[in-house]
Amino acid sequence: MARRVFLVEDLRGMRALLADLFATIGGLEIVDASTTEAEARLWLDEHPGAWDLAIVDLVLAEGSGMGVIPQARRRARPGAKVVVFSGYASPGIRAHCLSLGADAVFEKSETAQFISWLGGDLRGEPQP
Image (tube, rainbow, N blue to C red; front, side, top):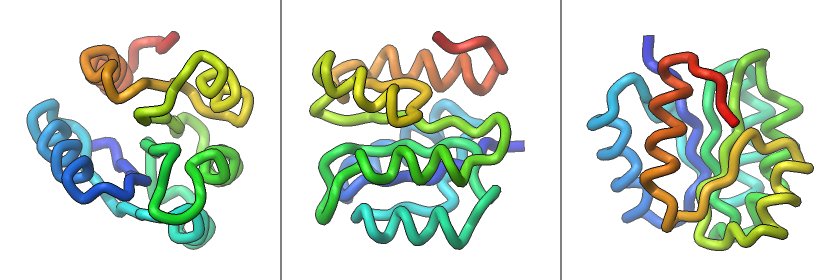
């Protein structure tokens, strides 16, 4: 069964690239995508348990992924993961995202590491 992905990303091109990436990797299916903090938080409230992996960008069309991370963590079912994939993942931001409940944080320039993490998660390997 594919892992259900809730994607929080405002850039249409990046959503398309991630969809292509997931199709290439296999085992990942985007169940919904939000472009703003408010949309994402509402979707999480209305769909508890409907996702296995939330991938969150920090800079959104309105609001911030920083507000989505703790909401996703609170609404996550056991075993669900919250991952930040953003162009603004400095060491300080990374630490803050982890303190908010993210399981992992990747700078968008760290695509290879992100893909490796996704592959390990799909195989059920322990993630750092």
